Every structure is written in C-alpha cells, then in structure tokens.
Image 1 (cartoon, rainbow, N blue to C red):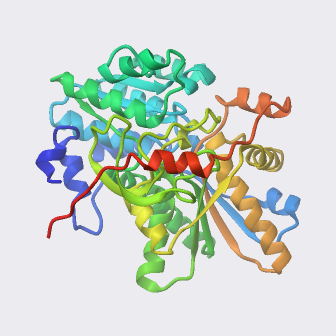
Image 2 (cartoon, rainbow, N blue to C red):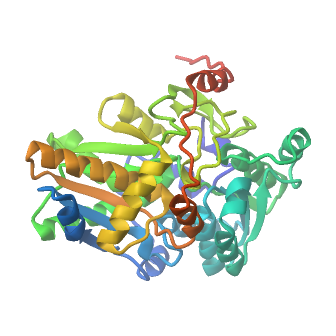
Length: 416
C-alpha cells in the first residue's frame, strides 16, 4: 500500500505518521490545549486491592477514566480531528462498539466544528443507550449497524432483520458512507499505526510517573480488542525491553468469546467484514467472524493491531482469554477495594491483574504490576445488574466456528 492509496480513507497527515521513521512526533499545540483538560492522567497505587488480595505485589493503574467521556479514546480522537480539520475535511464517519470511541470522536468533532456520523454495533446500540445519548449530546448522528443507510447494511438486514452486528460490519458501513460523501473521510479508533502512536501518551506519562515513584513495572497489562489502549500503555515500556533488555512482561487480556490472539491465525486479512478496507497481517478470526453479544462491546473485533500481533507472535506479548463471569467477578473485587467501577473491557485487564497478584503471593514475589484502567463503567451498569442477577453467560467460541470464519481469508501473493 502507498500513502496515495490510503488517502481515499484517511487524512494524509495521519498516513505520514503511520509510515514515519522518526522516533518521536511532536504533539501540536491545539491538541495539547484540549489534552490539558484531563492530561496527565493519574497513576494510582492500588493499596487497598493489594491488601484485599494479601499479595506482596505492588499494583499500579493508569486511570484514563478521567477524560470527559470516561475513556482513553479522546487521545486519538482529538488528534485525528485536528489533522483532518487542517486538511479541510468537514465530516468524519466512524464505527463504535461499546460507544466509547463514538463518544470520543463526537466530542472532538464538536470541539473543532466538524460533523460526525457514527455506526454503532446494533447489540451495543441496544445494550448501552446512554452512550448513544452522549454522542448525540455532542451533535453526532448515531445509527445502529447494520443499518439501511448503506448497501452493505441493507444486504445483511435482508438476510437477518435482527442481525446483532459486529465491529467489522460497522467499519464496512462507515467506510462505504465516507466513500460516497465527497466532504467526508473515515476515522478509526483502534488497530492502525497512527492510533497506536497517539495512545502512547499514556505510557510516556507513566514512564515519568514511575520515575517519580522510584519504581518500574515487572508486568504491564491491558485489555485488547483492536489493540489501542494496550499498545498505548505498553509500547513505551516495550521500548525498554527491546532496546535495553529490561525483563518486563506484557499481558494482553481478551474475551474468550472473541479470542483473536489466543485462537486466531496470524495471517493477512481484511479489516472489515465487507472486504473493502486494506488487507493487514494480523492475529485474526476471519473478517466474516461475528462474535456473540458480550457486554465488552469494545473487544468484539475479529482482528488485532498489526504491531501488537507481530510482537505477540515474536514472543514479547502473552495473550490470555477470559470468560465474562470471572471478568465481572474481578471488576466487583476491584470496585469494592478501590472505589472505581470499571468498564467491561477494562475488567478483562483487572482479571489478569488479580491473577498475577495471586501468583505473586503464591510465589512470594514482590512483583510490580501496571495496568491501564482504560475506562469507567458508569454507562455499563446494566451489565453489572445482569451479573448480580446471575444472568450473564460464559461463551467460548468453538474451534470449528473459528475455522469456518478463517476459511474466508483473502489469498495474498507477495511481491519481491
């Protein structure tokens, strides 16, 4: 792919960031001006959780829930809208799973005077009405995906009027809508390199905060759907592992119902269900994969960021898959210890943290654990209600279904 090829979808400034060979890229002042409303985000020591687990581990969390929309997503939304506005783009189309990305882009578009259209995965559209309200509050047009607004959406609804949707499908609709509108371009909240770049402000801040604390993590943990919050936290510390030989471990926590890293194939695949987005080499379950309607909507994506996938396959990242009931068990333990209600996506990271802390207790090791608390769960209380009512179901995607989805991988011939 060339920058000109990608310019049909993305602003050129973002494409050039993705192919840049610079070690660091300066953050523009107008972006910093918005960031200052909540950045730097705090790094907390989870002392009460440590006590509750009776662990010698020191647990830290970077709290991204302090942003205006309650997650890490504005770190890239603000940057993307700024660069798009500089190029004269007047509208962004996008997809959203749980609604965190959609609300972040809606806020950023509102700040910079751009229009925003959001295709929200239908099952999340129904499960999370208040996230829809936040997007509309900032002036965005929000539709359930699959929708009747695109050719691809209409084709899916003709086959199944109650189609639950997926991130891959919503991406396809947003791309189609952008291509049809001469004033619009497409915005993506995860997966691609420039998004991961923007999110590294999380880890860069954490590095400085650890210096002040005179500490350093032995383990860095994040939930992983497309890879943005995980990469944003871990990549600055990964630099220490790759260039200085630091022995830090990295754990990506994903849902058992959508296990792109633990059950997927490392292969070239489309980023969307309609096979219109570029082909990327990544951990994938197949672009036709439609996961069940678990409450961690932001983790219901068939693939993983190319850079995260590469590091995973090279042995630098461990991947763990969890059922949603033990994930909510962990979220409740964390809330009762630390007082913060975490989003279902973040709860996957909390599950991995608690497992690591218990392992440290059993081994008698005072290991240092850092995780990204990527978003609060105030708009996800319906999921907690279902958990307390015993209505949540664990779902493990069967291997035969994974193999069936992988049968649709594109045939790729590599040149010299």
